[in-house]
View 1 (cartoon, rainbow, N blue to C red):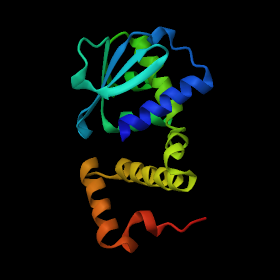
View 2: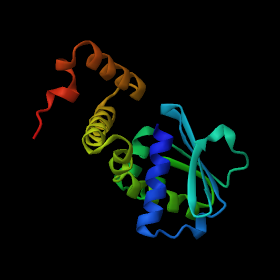
View 3: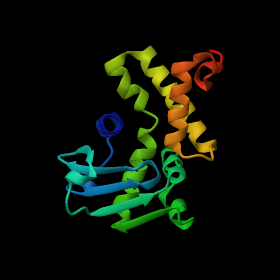
Length: 172
């Protein structure tokens, strides 16, 4: 789901914003989030991006390793230079290619609801976006592992929805 949503959002961004992807053409970028046990590969070809499992790609041009906080900061719009200065990100390979991907990720995080709405409708997409934002905020403020936080929140929603943080906020 994450891979498909990211791929759709990035490709829609390329189509609508006219982002120049010539510098990324033919590039393979590996993105590793060790804390979340997630590895994604971004393959750029024919002015499109494909997001697939890293294990399916050989000989990547750029390998990016970052932690949970750095990934959330990157999606929030923090520049890759700032994260590199704070030593929150490790880049092996062409830094310019990594910067271009990070710029696209920062812009695309705003359009994920739009990408989902084509498949689910506006109301469901808005609720999914709201759930993602609440989960992201809880993970960012939590001292436990992100997987444990998500598991706890899902258990609470299934067992006692009225106690969930998701339903405790009143609709505006």
